[in-house]
Amino acid sequence: MTVIAFRPRRSPEEPAPDGDGTPLTGTFRSPRGDEGVMTGHLRLQRLVLAPRGAFVTGVFTGELREPDGTLIGRDSKRTTAPADLVRDELGLHPVVRPLQLDLMGFAVRVHPFAIAPGQVFPSARRRAARRSGSATARALRDESR
Image (tube, rainbow, N blue to C red; front, side, top):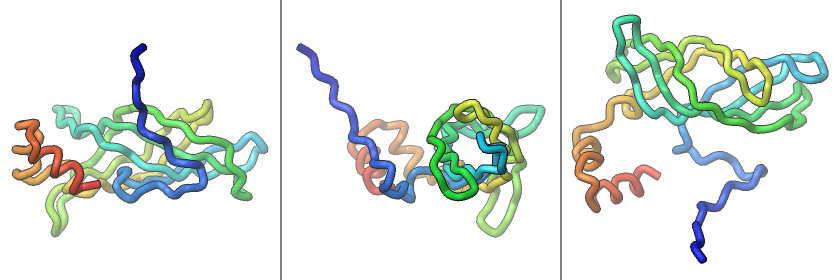
């Protein structure tokens, strides 16, 4: 018999680790008719530069709550969102524009948020290690966790 090992999931009470992605927030109309709050993060997969502009692709994960803090649920969705490239003292980084995201059947209005340049444009050492697929790449991945 073949056994597939899965990584253990975090418990709902356990806070999300810092390396989980770029934090984001949003609002939605809750089942009670109030304005609910979504907190979550984006696990960035890629930045796409096209003639029409810049776009980020990744997995948006959010926790939906009622205004009183009651948990409605958690959901994830892979999507592509428009972004503006902004230059500051750290270099270029994308700022994701406001967008509407469907999580658990709710239309969530995600507020604009910035992505750190290091997540989008990795260092030369990290790029070389990623290409090689070597023990160095595994060490760098473990180091970043």
